[in-house]
Length: 249
Ligand code: FES
Image (cartoon, rainbow, N blue to C red; front, top):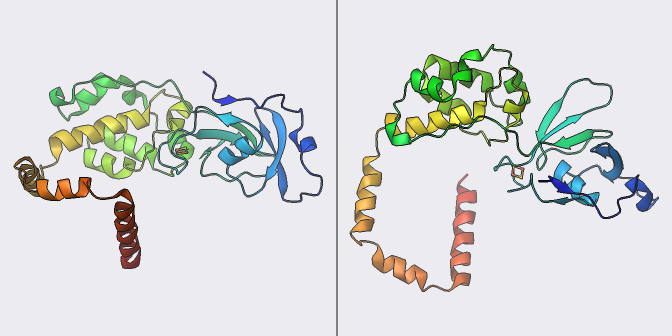
């Protein structure tokens, strides 16, 4: 499946179709083709400005879903740069390519049957033992996570540390795309976070109590009232709540 749909009858150089008087444009190259786009756009918006319709590799547009992993090169540098297309602003003469999906190992398991041990990890992700500590994964992370450190913590069985270091992972897959040992660090961390949540964290007594109250119908009256409330009133309350939160920060 295509990541982007080419613009209909895209010109060889899209700058030719843009007004000559614009001075805020910078040249970028998408899949090798040159376009002039406003210098303030994110890569994602630059794609759209150039006439591409994003049909994959585009989700939340807010740096959360990890769908828009992008690699690019800059003039005069052999380095492969990475970023989320929805968060990274274009730079003059960047050569762009999107990697919205990378075929990485994703284990199938029944969480209830797993025991939180290194042997469990190695059974589902045996390639974990091949990590050579090159740090390429950390350098590839658009979220600036210490990926290699959480891989090391995983091997050492320090699962709470893995959770701490990987909790902001957006699963864009760029670490797996670059790992020479063919690990999928983001999937390994996901398994560990699940194991920790299911088997190593003490259940919250308050949560259990509240669930019992809900099951017993303690809040039924309020819920019904809420269901019958006009949508505009709910929106108003939500805005007020957000304003209160903002004021208290
Ligand atoms: S579109 Fe969701 S992280 Fe970029």
